[in-house]
Length: 189
View 1 (cartoon, rainbow, N blue to C red):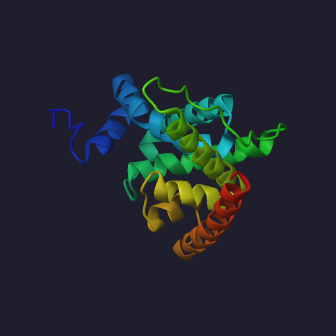
View 2: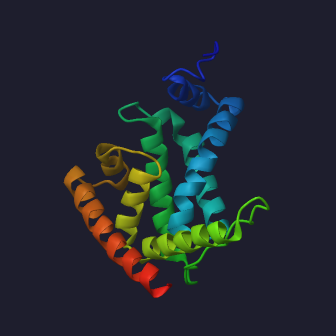
View 3: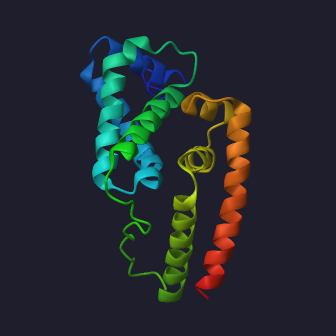
């Protein structure tokens, strides 16, 4: 809770106000705050480091240019993720190349047991493959709910659809994931 309000609940709103006034330092703080969250969100949508970087930068450019239009009627995170979602959808429609079903695995830690590490990678690949098989709208709703802990109302704002549509997408996503994961894990044993 500093004097500039960065740690208070209204700290992000304060930053947006400062960004609207052209404060580059406030923008840098907001960028650093949202970069990892947006990257995680977009990774499961695009699977392309180049596209992720482009969408994050395009999203934050919109935040910089339109900070004055943020009216506080929703959480700042809802507004930012809505911009990122729309930018990612447009980027995916422009792609000519197929999406990678198996993203690069992270480097193995020396202190991990090989069997445990293998099982984690196997489960991670199964989940990534199952998520990749979902329609974009279901995949995005699932990610926003489970990885970013957003409410149905926030997701509805981001995806510009009714709350009941979000619930329906999540219902179908969970059913498809359960079925897909079950089949994949059986196939790999």
